[in-house]
Image 1 (cartoon, helix red, strand yellow):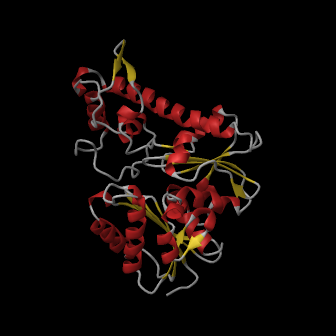
Image 2: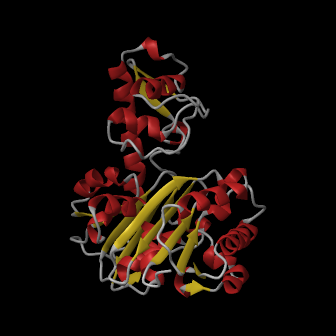
Image 3: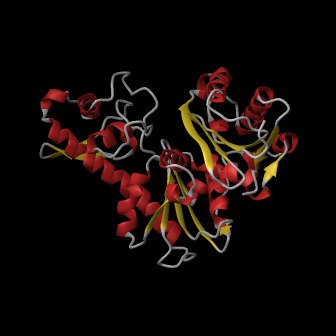
Length: 345
């Protein structure tokens, strides 16, 4: 077992992300796979077993999580404890450390005794990793489900909230992402066929359908089933979007559904930008500080950075390794950050 390889885990409610980094800070693995954790812990076990076939041997593991939030668990405390127990059972005899935000890495007993520190602390790990490397900027991680926004300056992460509740109030956490977010959460009403119409409050389509139709979503970004269980072609995405208006695909040309998708994508972009404006208005960052983009949805940030008149830096460009690894590390930024932090890099 190679003691020079540190492994970082981000145990989410819908995906498991893992990265491995050597003592020089070079990436060796960066992987994300779907995991329907809300259906049972056996789904986590299957995901870990599948990932074991892809990973290098490693003694040192750092773990962060958001999966404690899924409704499999009665509350976050139970979720943290059961996820810790699952990792300990799967990796007996390894050095497992659990990320506790400002408290750093905790042993399993400490982490279970302080679940409020461990729960949903993955965003802090990303910020801390960059801050300790002297980065300054507005870090924005747009994932499949959520968006994290936090200023980094002076070697520190400047957050007003730590819990999900507090961060949502401060708009440091925005519940919008580019694949799993239901379309009904992006806008109340939309322009279509010369009218303005309310959307159905039904889970008929997701943000993945929107961004597929705009052509911005990477082909391998959407790792879960679609809302109707059908395929992921432009026409099938448009059919799901049409259903949000009580219409069928054939009631309009594909171009009309693509126009609707562009409108909805702009609604999501504005939602993220408004939160970024609020966080940036605290005055902690100089005007020239960049937007640092992470997550599978960071394609939204290039235009937002331009509007904010800030340069854009991509998390992938801050990593060492080949281009494919750096891309996946950017999508799995907390896992890459935890690997670096636990390895002391």
